[in-house]
Amino acid sequence: MIRLAIALGLGQAGFHAFVAALPLAMLAAGRDNGAIGAIMGAAAVFNIGAALVSGGLIDRFGGRIIFLGGTACFAVAGALLATELVTAGGPVWALLVVRLLQGIGLGAVMPAVLSIVPTLVPSRRLPTALAFVGVAANLSLAAVPPLSLVVLDQASLAVLSAMTIVAMAAAAFVIWPIHPTPEAAPDARPIRHTFRPKWRRAWLGPLGITILFIAHWGVVTGYLPQRAEAAGADVGLFFTGDALALLAIRVPGGYLAGRFGSRWVCVGGLAIVAAGLLLLLLPPTTPLLISAGVLSGTGAGLVLPTLLLDLTRRSDASDRGSAFALFSVAFSIGIALGSIGIAPVIDVVGFEVALAAGIAACLAAAGVALVDHASRHSAIPPVGPERVAEPTR
Image 1 (tube, rainbow, N blue to C red):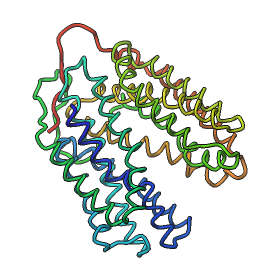
Image 2: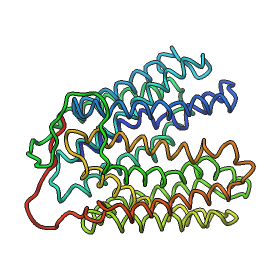
Image 3: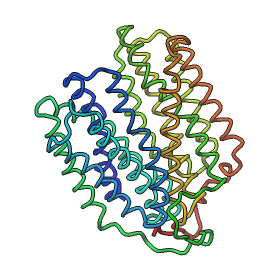
């Protein structure tokens, strides 16, 4: 499990290394903010399509092969920038090719890793295992962008890109020896040889909660920094508090979801997030932003493990890749709704109204969790025979 978490952290560095560095490199090359935003945002659109395709591929070929394909896309994108065949000031279409490759990579690596987790651990350890792997993704997002800015400042975008190629090779080396443990799963469906993503009605609840819950994050990331800057508050400490709380709570949250069921853990987490967002409706100060960030991260640390656990337990080896791919799609849709969706009217309705809509979405997600019948019965018995989900193929 440690190897799998390391592989995910290294693999996602192929995307996170450019989250902050590429916009600054394009700005230094003379591009305007509109072009930079369009180029950077294109990856999210590409990610949605890639995640849908990767779901069917994972179901057909298994998570390890698709993970290697995703890291290969990151490596090719890095090679284009490292060799300066594509530059920050070059043709827009060339940069869009890089973002296409990065979007495909992102849409592949996370669902692929999550699909492998149930094949490596017994059922009783599944909640904490999923949360542990999720922590690796959070660490990558928290650590890689700041490090990338240091490399960009001390060297160049080409050097940073070369370093991501090394990281992708390391990720492939780490994950290669991992092999799923075969095990008979009585509820597994026959595996059909298809590349289309599959669908189960039982996934509707967790995916709906994901979209509603994540919508507030699009508002926060898109518009809170400007509001805090105008008030003289340090918005960076909000994100620091959020990240640290999420890292601290995610594994305990997974344990609670496995021990007591996901329903009330999820609802409690959503309530904590809503409380943090209510603080952001007040005039921003640095202490207030820190408090809101801690509440936001704490709530997310409870909500996210429940969603991954529910999707895992409502799928099997024949469609687990599709389940996690659709989770990635739902995540991207939520971000888009909160950021791009509100963009045309944010100047009219104001930040407070937009954030209030995000709070309402969190409360709606809690309502979905309460009426989602399957979540009431998702606790894993503390005793009894262990069962590992059927391996991917």
